[in-house]
Length: 170
Image (cartoon, rainbow, N blue to C red; front, top):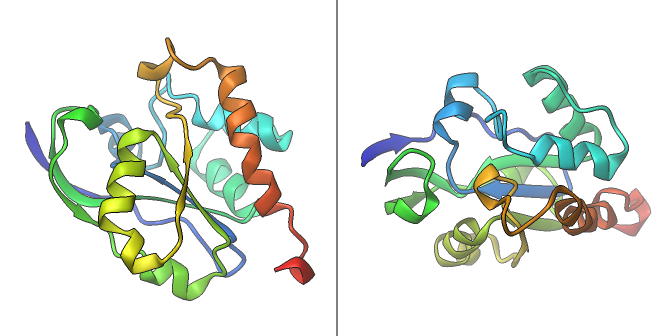
């Protein structure tokens, strides 16, 4: 078990409408410097399918994909004790301050990827944001037995109802 401090900047801009939160970047994501970067993680494949876009091949393309669809990416935790990428091992969690994102953008929905992210958001962040999170299944390869790529695409498609809203609808 090791102490980890979040090392990735949040991805968002003033046009962001949706915030997607994981728990904490995996060792591979920290190594590659971007969210959901483990080669077996299905996040980018799923998000690309939901929006009918090519799968991004580098960090710049990943950032462009989410911003083009008014999505912010960050994580619930600023620091914690964790073993590898195992959410179940998280101890001593400290939440990220989500106020900068909410202050800069008109967040219509918060999505949390996985049970642990959902649990931690509700416990540590909900009082700060006042916005209930919507659970999405984890795109982690560790979740393969329970959730196929097609299951994930169906679940993640709900994001479109928030990102496709016209400015006049907000």
